[in-house]
Length: 232
Image (tube, rainbow, N blue to C red):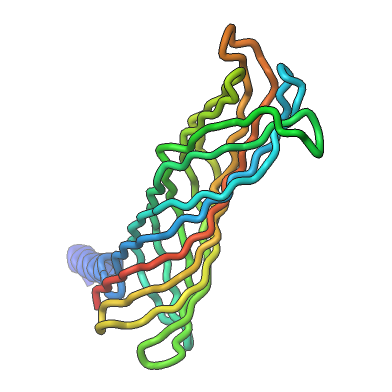
């Protein structure tokens, strides 16, 4: 075979291989988009030491908010299961809180930190494993990891703290999926999310003198309703 013919054959094989790879890469079968609405049951827990007033921060508060999310992903068949890989983006409503501060246990409570979490959102990569239990119903479990953003501010009237925070976040969840159409699913689920901790320094409102620290941990329990649309 002449050199020119060899080069032509190599070119044809290469183009064929690239076309096959491109077809696999840009095959969107079983890809999906999803939108979710959640009841966000937030747990706020404080700790730290106020050196200006010589007392500790304490307490745990529960707040109820709304959250909204959208996701893009793809489903894969594996034995009797479906594996879903997705990227999820969630936006959570602002939350106000009040934490106790006192000279020492058991009290009495003498001051209260009042504050708020604003501009809250997360981005996570998730893996879900679905198991069919009937023709149109599946159960699933899984989780994900990513990052959480929020702006934090708190004060007890004498000292103040604040932070624009980005923290590692993770979640796990379980749920039930109902097939409405061949390419549409409704998902009823529960999520447990660790949204990170705001570790902040306290300073006096007047003069800005260092006054210890205030740490606030964020966890969220969520009841989630999701609509998922596939390309079949």
